[in-house]
Image (cartoon, rainbow, N blue to C red; front, side, top):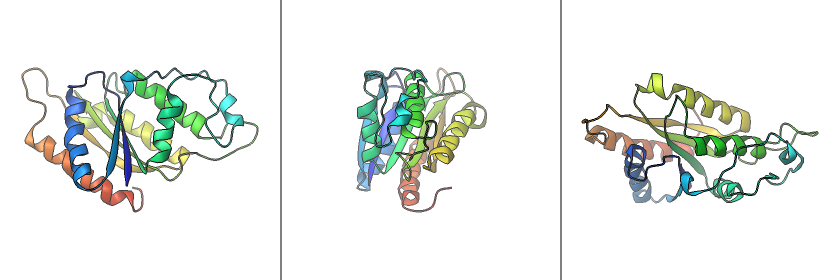
Length: 197
């Protein structure tokens, strides 16, 4: 199994990276070939809404010249896509949002003169997030957006791991979070070969 994790945090030693580390370690121990891509190290321009991509059925077809083609290629080569991000203003970070906008529209040919394929159909999608609110109040809108993407583009939603930051002076990466990250990896690998939720 191949997995790509897109890291949407600007901090390489932050909470989101800390929560993703035991997840990736468990994946490696279970024989998963995992790649991590740091989105803040990439150039991901915002979508122009020009719809040029919709006339290219066998590839992205985007007019923007940036790193999207390489990032989308990593999605296409993987069985499972994991989006890891802190939640800022009830949604993902800016580079993650730009990646999602472009991957959804250039990757799903629903908006041109002729309806075409979803280039990511059948892939598994999961999320790892951190936020300062309880998950049901901090990460729920992000999860709803990802579930909608899955329904729209034929991906299989495999769930979300959310770690809450309790604020200054409170240790983030507890034993419970470490165990939850490892459990999430095992559950994801098990579900990735079966039906979506």
